[in-house]
Image (cartoon, rainbow, N blue to C red; front, side, top):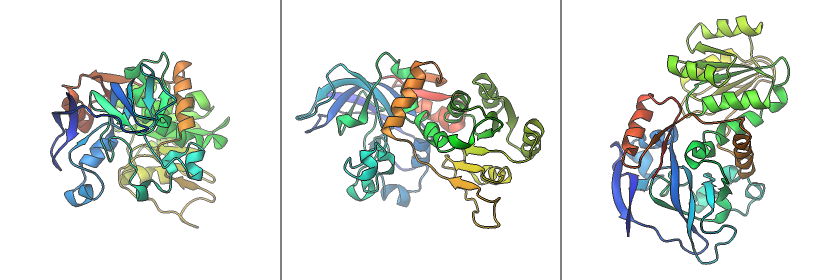
Length: 348
């Protein structure tokens, strides 16, 4: 049996839709019939790596897709905890399952994953941009229940990542606080909703795109300004002080990091979520006292369950554009061009 899969085949070339064998689950593994797969800027980042960096970390060809949802289709020997027909979401940052972090569900921070060669689907081995995918262990599957897979698959990253980033600053985001979201695209527009649901902070969105600023307003930002040299002054005008409580940077390129640093005050948080490759200075006399710079990564399995609970209660939703598997190359082209309103979701 063969299936269609969107694969990265040649370094520097666009991904290709190919026919490949349907995978069989090994001992302890689960095969999913994929119902939805999300396209993410992390995929674009991987595909932008030069050959020497790419080949040191990732295989070729590789089926893309680290946001995945599906129906359990077949169980390998010894796989328990799920049943054929279950609708599930895939938790992406896999770990060893045995260390202290994994025991707490924080497999995103597993210290042994790299040495053991454990990688996320679509970011080191075949992922969800296919008709079927293999999941190494049932513990990486979270029940979707009655949630629509296409509407919610992006929550496995675009929801989980900002949720984890924001949770680290929740203690500061009480009455009178302010939160700036830089980049109101796929992750940023979800971050705005989470900040409105979880905090009483004044939420300010910054972006270079008028369409994304409109999206930010639509999903609940109190204010939305162009991310340009006037942003700092405009933020000070609406909150009454020059510094903000927290900055969540979903771009993390040099200009946004510079802006975020300029917005810091005493005990502020500057949270770097994007993979734009910029750097920020830290240290005594280089920043306001007790200002914090954090670079969180993805999120834990319990946090994914919490994000899905927020979706069930209507507190968060992902703006999506749907594509068939045949249209998946166009989804990545639109992602690269920045013309998506929210997230691209492929529905095999």
